[in-house]
Length: 303
Image (cartoon, rainbow, N blue to C red):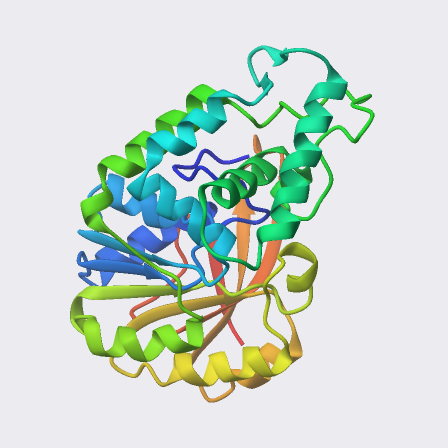
């Protein structure tokens, strides 16, 4: 699992593209604002900011549960940290009481999340969302707990819940709050706002929408086919902005972006000592004005 500056865990997260994105910014002489309309864990957004690659990171997520987490990290981190400290298990110490208590706590947070995930932002929703992301299989928000309900496996529910590390990440992100813009728009509504507010010469947008094939299985909020098609049209309307868009491989998506000038498939190439040896393929679309080429572990092929 790659190290990340994000408090979240996400399957196939953008963190592994950090070096590639950083290179694109440098190659195109961009150091102003970096934007993620589907922020999720926002690992790249945080790392670019922490490493002074950009002056500001704009993170947007339409999912109110994800937005709640970021809101409380930026505005009221100590309230979130207090709840984290009260979790009855930890990576370093295991179960504070016993397995049953840990699973009961997990069920409470799961039930709270299901009840409030379509409501308003709240501390309870922020905590439940972050907690489930850290303790569910592969970080998938609607998955079951790591180790199963019986906790009979060697890897158990506390395996990815390191309180000390999580609190450090939250405090570090909060310390950069003046350089972070947080919004809660539908991505299709955000695009015209970006067109008006951004300096197109010194900003970069990374669209990473929910998977076309598996989105509804990974996230509670995901586009349908028409939503993906409309999004593609709106992204391609950003004629003066620098952007890239990544997707899982599907002929529908290739068709939606057929009028775009720079369309690629890309492979993430993993080093020999990486547990994820081999290659993973996705689609990448780039704005016509972006100077782009293969770099680091990202190998591009024109489609």
